[in-house]
Amino acid sequence: MKRILIACGSGVCTSTVANQKISDFLNENGYEGQYKMEQCKVTEIVAKSENFDFCISTTAAPAGAKCPVLAGLPLLTGMGMEKLYQDILEQMKK
Image 1 (tube, helix red, strand yellow):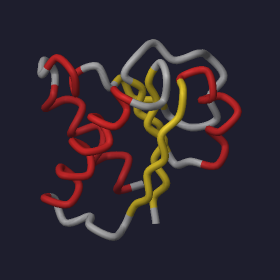
Image 2 (cartoon, helix red, strand yellow):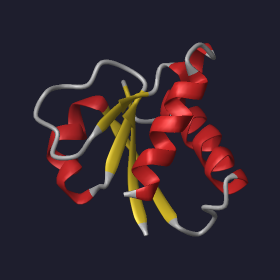
Image 3 (cartoon, helix red, strand yellow):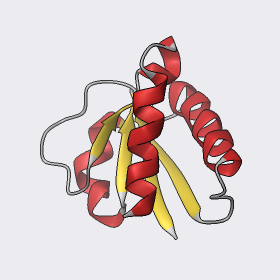
């Protein structure tokens, strides 16, 4: 079971959009039931990161995270989605 942390500025709006898009993508790629996601504020990444396999942040993440942090801005802009999705699949395979 992969644990994925989804972060945005407030931990509510943007991370909810990201959560849904990532869930849809993972389910379409055969990972349904193989992950759990939690949303948080970007300022909570460092403190929470040791309990997660990787993080996706829709805004600039602080240094010091204990897990890989992927840039999630493509989830909002649509630019660079293929690269982000490939990075997510790579993290899921680890």
